[in-house]
Amino acid sequence: MSLGGFIQGQAEFGKAPDARFNGIEDRFYLRRARLNLQGNFLESFDYKLEADFSGNSLSESTAVRAQLTDGFINWNRYEFANIKAGQYKTHFGWEQILSDSKMFTIERSLPNDRLTDGRQIGASVTGGVLEKRLSYAVGMFNGTSVNSSQNDNDHFMYVARVQGTPVKTQVKGRPLEWNVGVNALTSKDNGVTKAGFGFDSTPATAADDNLFVGDRNAWGVDTQVKFGLFDLQAEYLRNRYEPDNDIPANGFETDGWYVLGGYFILPKYLQAVVRFEIFNPQLNVDGDSSDVWTFGLNYYIKGDDLKLMANYLYGDQDGVEGGRKGRLLLRAQVIF
Image (cartoon, rainbow, N blue to C red; front, top):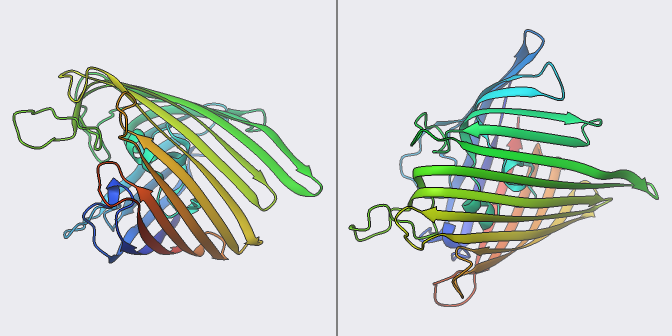
């Protein structure tokens, strides 16, 4: 049994490069403050219990409350078939699965925030073969939201992911690794919050309620390359929504993608990062997409355990006048 956690203190200044920052002023705040307990027992089981004491959200809040992030038990007797149950990250979207404390940028891309489902309560089977160079995950979840024991209907959300490492070698003394992943998701929803698409389950009211009722299917592909001091990451996600009330349309597709490059200017210590992303909420509508550039520097004082991060986001947000807008994000991270 071990006790640990991490703290991410953050500061932000500037305008809103994408919809997540609309209406948010310059501020200091705790992005994440987590405490976890994890360990193993009876030789073939491991577990994790983690809570966040900062609210775990980009949104402004005047009443931050602690909430459970992870709580699961995993049967690990066979490496090729672990059985996991509880609340944890679903197996859809590589950037979403990546640990918050190990990312190269301060925030995830907008496509990842809009097109994946984060943590849910459910169960899955995961495993690895060929010395873990090929792994898989298949799971079923309530598909409602984090910290919700409610299922909105008699249907579950099903997800599946396969990831492989075609290349893992050295070239002139420098490590070279190439990973590729594919994943899919399907769900029948009856009131799941999905912001940014114009869903409205109660059209008689003045404002959209962002609640989706209908069928949802999604897929995605991703790749990561690491060669010496250089890192390359790319991901494409695509969803199809079929709202029961045809609002905002009678079936439509949405997609998003990003490409990220990172290079260690000072090996092990100073890393420069550039990311470009595009999010398109409705592929059949012209001119509604938004794009964001992220320029960053990461200073690893003691790896990810103690690091400083600075990002400048420069984005063109759909439906907002005034052209591109920039926002500076600063973060200090401590893992203990």
